[in-house]
Picture 1 (tube, rainbow, N blue to C red):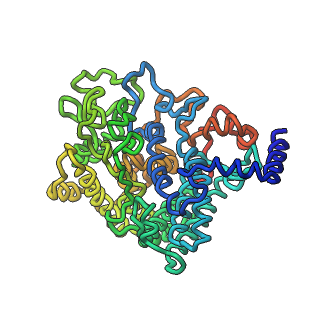
Picture 2 (tube, helix red, strand yellow):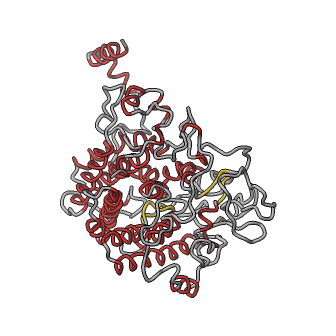
Picture 3 (cartoon, helix red, strand yellow):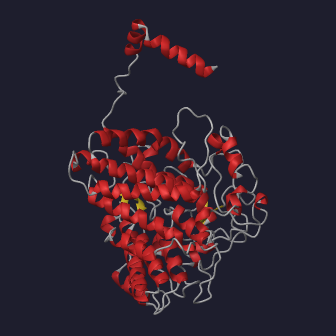
Length: 521
């Protein structure tokens, strides 16, 4: 009935000049009906970098980067590898891919294509590929083919295999477009909306190659599809140093345009570091103290670095002096408008992809090829470049941790426990966790699922993710299983698209424990 009424209304308006005039006077001069293609870009780049951090509050507990402790009297759902029924918690990327980017990205790409702005269209293709990549790695099956069909009220889900094919197609297109110099390719025009690379299409081309490498490396459990040489080739066409890192600078003038992890926004004040992340850096797992620990993590009031047990409510038996400070470096709710630490500062630049991250992906691919020399070189490059990354983040105005010195760096890299003669998967996996701490949530979690959280290194017999252990008391709906995916966004899917969910088993209580296609043989 609503559809019929809408059709009649449109017909009436189309035939009435008076109505047409009436609509004209309601045009908003401050929100023109048509805008330049490059003006769409800034908010979409903002969400590409920022929405993973909003979801990181929850996924960071699956990966045990942090633990919700202050103000709780029981273990939280997410710390137990569960979820919050009837809530949109953990679904920010879903919202932003389908809505914040959504039709805006379609319109930007259509205008860019019509105007032959191939550089802007190439960036748009990257954004489209990024969206499907993070969503399918996060949720498994997602809606792609029917996602923006305005004539549908329910939507069928596509397989994860289809999503992966679509990501590859989009990235191939982006690479072709970003190599073009004809038409209206214009760095100055692109720069007006490009808040990451300031209009440099060659850096976006490197980013596309990096995203393709990350994408192809996810096939590691599928022997017939995994091609480590292709992964390495794309990385070699991607970032060559930290100067290529994709970093977003937040204006830091209003609440919503500050770094999401900054103290002013107060989004991680009640979280504390875990035994797992501390153990990777305090010598527990590698026998030497990582100089990055004192620059990335937060000490207790007594000056020691401790993590929390994810199976114990709050701080357990730790005294007040032993309880880890918040990530800003202060006890309790302290640190408001004071200097932060590492990525936990209002002014911190947040990455979407880094050279260090790609070097660890290259090291894994090389190791799987049996090329120890190449793997070791990439691995050492990853550590070295991440140390430089940590120093750069802590150079922000007023940050308190001192710079890691050249001597500290060289001593650490010279340790055979850190850079061994024979590299093992557990080295790569552990160092990649450190390099992605507090920002690379989607990739870190998929890595853990690719290795089933607790797989053993076939060479050393050590656990690939050293020191990681699933919670001993998982969420009741799990049936004792580990989490494998996040359920689709509640308010769009469980309220409005239940037929679509029914078809993929999304209404089952344990849907979040169903392994995804990409991690299966």
